[in-house]
Length: 458
Ligand code: ADP
Image (cartoon, rainbow, N blue to C red; front, side, top):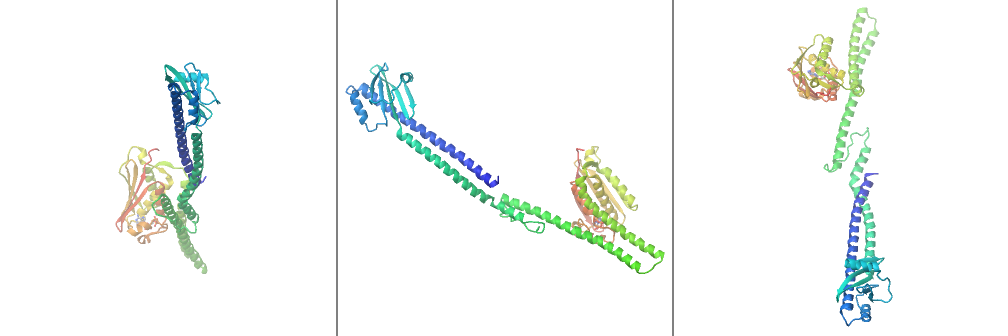
């Protein structure tokens, strides 16, 4: 069921329950009041008739009947009986009796002093009247034609009022919920119109204060992120194709020029060596691209497990120094808690190692002394790593840009590289819920600090 229908029905249900409760109470109290009032009138009638018949000597049953018949406030279908101390009838107000009180009823009246009973619409009030040392019984009965008709009328008004109000509430609820939900419908319509081709479109943020505006704002923020990722992806693909095409063009050119003339063996050897160099660069580039693509696949495919960062650091150092014998990676450990959990991180070990080797490589590569110092620290809750070099440094503007794929700072261009290591490293760090911070000074050196939440469960 749509929210609009649900809201209207729930609203109607609440109002209808309140109305039923209200109408029920009104009807109940009116009926009780009518009954009490009518019985009081019957009691008055019984008392008056009793007093006239028993205590006023001048009034006998013939006269009393005449008086009874001619009183202004005679009740509809009124009947009054008087019984003496032996339950013998001594007076009746009408000759045609609808229903005479039964001996059981008379007994009940004597027992209780006063007794009320009902037969259909016919209501009876019986009292004991003490006079002249005798206990008379006076029973007055009548039908409350006006009271019951008023009550019926009230019931009719309440039922019609209830139906009318329920329908009105349903209608009102439907209109109001429609109005309240209209902004959501508008947001849905606007969102539906956004596709991959118009990602720059945004949802109307309305007054920027209410919940729906918050939803629109959150949605727009998500669109910003998607658009950013989309554009990064697009520029990555075009940069990658450009980077791949350049060495291929160089290689093709070299081969074409070589084939123009016959050359001696030494010349061919020199040219082949140069082509091999270019192919190796190309290979490195493709590997870098593959690693970036692989990182995403790995995170989905490989199992996350716990590994010790200090041990991985030594393995990465070995790899780097084996590949580049002139590099020097120094590891210093500040804190090494006994608890293994404080040294461990949960994640994908090979990827984490790639990040460490990249940072070690960069530290050595961009420093004239080919040295990098790695400081390992553990606070118990966090594993901290610092890569310090005394190299060429990175200026402020470049600090933001070096994470873009293929971006290389001006001062680094004379040193070989593809500009793919740092983007991949930062991605791996964020996959492991880590933080990445760079502080650097041109021609003085660079410090890259990483911190990861330690995984104690392992
Ligand atoms: P590459 O090392 O292949 O150039 P990276 O993605 O690893 O690519 O680095 C991107 C850029 O960041 C480098 O070209 C360089 O300008 C800068 N950079 C990275 N590490 C350092 C460092 N330790 N010292 C100075 N510059 C650095």
